[in-house]
Length: 403
Image (cartoon, rainbow, N blue to C red; front, side):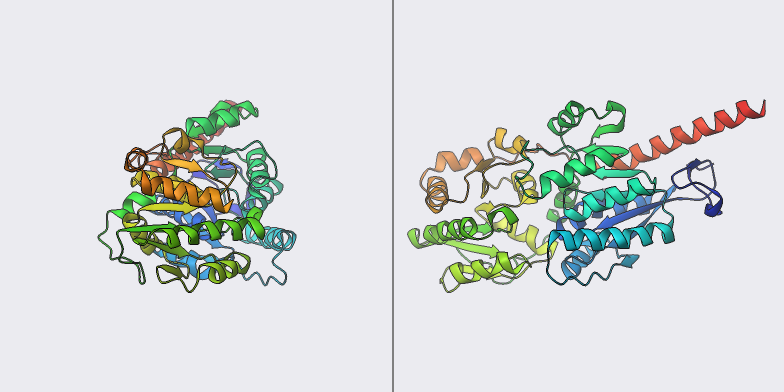
């Protein structure tokens, strides 16, 4: 007998109430951005393989084309797409639109749990919507903290909101777990699983894929990205000037810059990096092409959280274009260095790796501080165990009541 949430006559049950039934658990999986698609993809695929649950996948439409492309890499297509018609692109506009849509989706789908990953504004909204509807919220990649509410902005606040509302917290590392315990989250609601991004990376890197179109044919190629809101304006432009200066200074050095859909990120990249004979500014790549670029690059220069996790597993040194990072494990492992956005600092950090082979060698040893590629299985197994435990408790209560 399968042990799951709810049953076919869901209207007779309270939302979130656990039942021992013959039907499957409906897991509402919310995906907003491409990084979320990459990290949710292995979990959704694992749920599809299970005999006790099924995923109902909803995309919010924030990065529609690249999100669906990333999901396809895991054999996943959305069950539903939200048609968010944003006018000004503000966080408040997004917040209001998503919470209204989620209210309708939860009422119509009647999920037994809701799953989301990370720290975007849409994840914070989803966690609140789940809380308001009394549906258990499962937070993937829980417990990341910098201790500064506005750095990174708005992600630090978003993940704290998700941490307050979650029923289960799946932490990628022991350090993330420790953050949750310090905040008073019950240990029984937490599990260290590793990061599902490593699941996705190792599965994709095992494929023999060609280099993406335009990838420079040079001995050393920097794979670069930049898109953080807190860097928009002068900090981002300064960092880009540092990257261009490195290409000017070293004749055998190329740059493959992958732009972000947000015009406040890609406009300065095109303006500052464009026109250089050894710099390629590429439009957003699908996940397979991004991993192919990562496998072939010399170093990574980025403000992306995902690349801070992925690159060390492939032995690629990372220079972080931020002043803080909520991913200190790879810094401690020696694979990542936080350099900020000052152009001279960026240039000096790149040149140090270029000029000092021993420094590059230390940073290019593959390390796995974020998991072994089995995170999705651990998460799905833990969810099943939790739901089964509650179902057994209900059965015992019913037996005692009938006695």
